[in-house]
Image 1 (cartoon, rainbow over the protein chains, first blue to last red):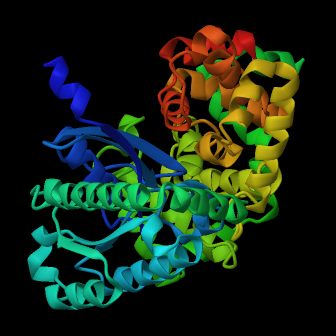
Image 2 (image 1 turned 180 degrees about the vertical axis):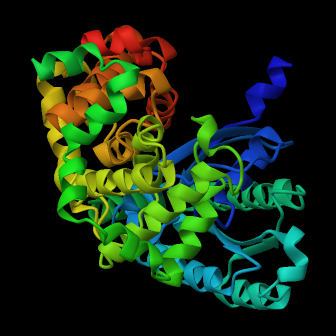
Length: 204
Length: 257
């Protein structure tokens, strides 16, 4: 198997979970990494999860930062999502207000990142609470479409589409990697310099 | 002498009463007879009640008292936290306050024959004291106080463990990233229960202390050997989030502190 590993690159990505309190951010991460469901303690600060995906073209390592959702923590949140490659904006399909919060998160990320710097997914969690649904699937879908976000409805409890959304993120990140390489080989590395200098001026 | 006693650990049979005197919650209660009952009768702001309710059943595996859904412990905690949002409406409820309110509830619960009256009032005034005297500003809007304490912790670390300090600086890890839960919950969600009690004995006697945090940092990141497995920012954060049980163990920790 060594020859395979030699050709197949490994990419490490920081992925951050954002969204209101008790929409199921920690539960999503827990389901994805441990394939289990348990009620989590309210996150204070941040929790961490790692997942490795062995895909055909590359190995993807996700470093998942699971943040505190309560608005109280908002003023320090930029410290958590700084340098992220992907963000999951999670809302609860049984709580309309949480979608509005997710939209605010998007505005904030747009201020911090350029569109090609981060992959953003809108995630409507708790599909197991179908009877209490307040947000129609189409509403989330339409918003994601107009903003150019990945979109999926999930249930951390029943395991519905949890792997799928992370897989979609991995595919999108790899697609961008490929695009970057092809642009680089065309222009001989000048874009990389540009990106870096931009990143430097933007930090702090 | 009290200070020494608190460092050595207050005997369990006296702890509830000792915490009342040390924290000043007993005096507060006596100065405000009837205040808690008055707040307890008010309905409360729905936006805070909603969050508190959601949190209650997913709180505190740390003590049997709070395990049963809708049981005494959870009910009491709800009333204490709700009363606080009415006492300080501009602050409302912060999720880190639930463990803060629950810890003293355990030793104080046995006080008096009527836990639902005396114990509950004590727990409430104890929470007030912690939020106003011990950790002022920790749970208010911008979290400025905790950020400031993060900076203080970090500069103290420079003296206590230059190796850990250099490592965290190099990896650009803001103190907020690792000390928020430690400090906002006064270590109640970090340490094993026996250590929590000992740390809180000292906390009530001497006020908030940076020493516990410094000991944890020093023994997790304080030598080049320990840093070998903390190459990246993420690895370091993971390590600080999953501390070695050895350094959190009561006797070791208290002795180091």
